[in-house]
Length: 147
Image (spheres, rainbow, N blue to C red):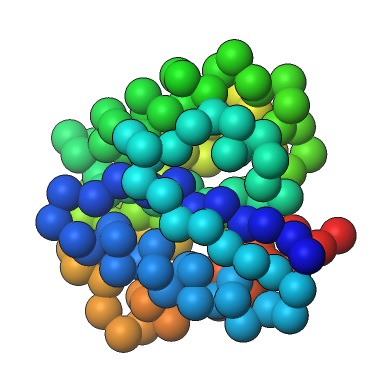
């Protein structure tokens, strides 16, 4: 069994909705288990123990929400133990929904993570199309977690 960790922050529930769709995609992969955790409640050791990880946050002021950045800062003590893990990112909100996505993906290089797929940036609230994309993102991550 592989273990996928989804670390996210949400203000209004929009990013959480995306996280749940990513989790649904992971669960559709035989042999992949998933854990959903809010960033403020995630222990960096959970990051180390995961076979793959997804990060999600709303775009705030052109970048990722500070709560997710705080997680990355807390996890720095274990960054040498995360190298090579597959990872994906997802974000939402306006006006520049790609700002947060780019920031999250920048942290991949700091932690030695390997992008398992292109990330998803939903404009505003994720609709059916974006949630279906999140599910596919989870499927790709679930498959990558088993390699």
